[in-house]
Image (cartoon, rainbow, N blue to C red; front, top):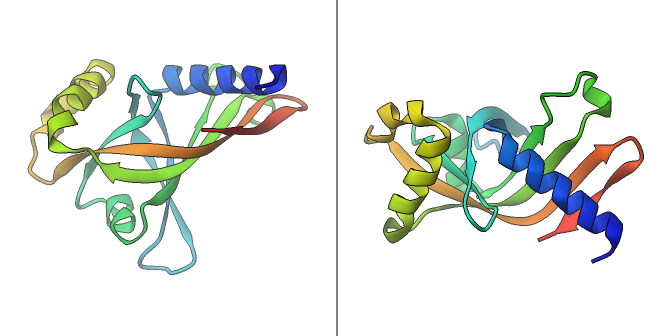
Length: 149
């Protein structure tokens, strides 16, 4: 990996580690051909994959049942001007976390979002993980590119 790609990868990891929420874009099942975006909380697992706690009633979860491909957008909220701030868009497939991995995912997520413990016990919520295929990073003016997973 070259120096520029290493820098972009480090920026992506930092943004995803520091963020507590992002915009999840899914493929709309009700309006074919259109994306559907929603604000979601997430936490990273040890492999750097986002973990989500999603309700089966949510539109994004319904969309994922039809097409698991999605993107997660996160930006640096500490910076002022949105067009010059660092940001990352991760592409991947969102998969249900296997039952034998749920406890670890739950612990990671609730450490980041303790208030989610209330709805984590609701019957319609499930644990999901994004398996990334590629990540696009804007690290600042003129510093951008794809980081392959």
